[in-house]
Amino acid sequence: MFRGQDAAFLSRHASLEEVARLLWQSSALSLGPTGQTRLARSATPKARGFDFLSRRAVADPPSFGRSQALLQVDAWEVLSGFAGALLGTKAPGLIYERIAAAW
Image (cartoon, rainbow, N blue to C red; front, side, top):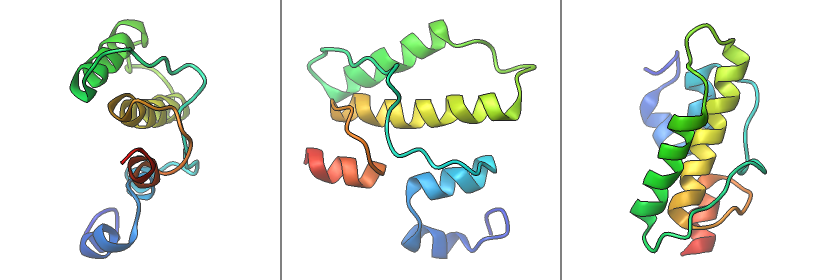
């Protein structure tokens, strides 16, 4: 069980974003990166991913004391931005759709 939902059912029928929304108790569903996402020109997905995360770690404010709404915005941006960094694209859509388009 996962927040009152059958985890096996979710694994077969829900997108990563839908499960994240359930985990974060968020009403919003992000379908792509924000305009703030800057992709590194690194040669490998791993290097782009680490570059993205390191820039967020330096620039983002501490989580302590911030509202749930702001933390949810950050979480969506990190999830979507990290996927975009790994894929090397800022395309909109669900992560599995973005992976399929980049493949």
